[in-house]
Length: 83
Image 1 (cartoon, one colour):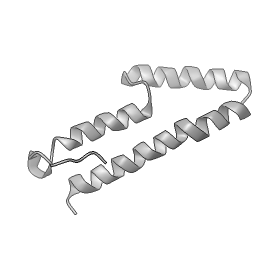
Image 2: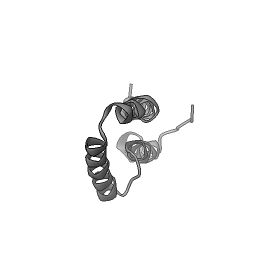
Image 3: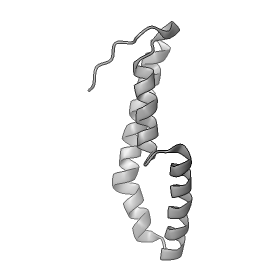
Image 4: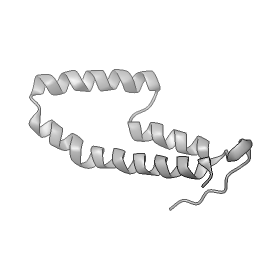
């Protein structure tokens, strides 16, 4: 397998993981954490998101995927199909 294919598969797996976190794990954490802890985490996450100019980690991974989509080995365009 070429590096770009492996990187694409890894990126897709990370996107699926990020979606699971957003849909399952983060709502569960919100239910379990007290208000002060949740507020502190929200502030820390907002600071990271602002620094990266991204709304979510999924957006970061999607940006990486978009960059990888346009580059194959040695900088040639890589054919890419959405699944």
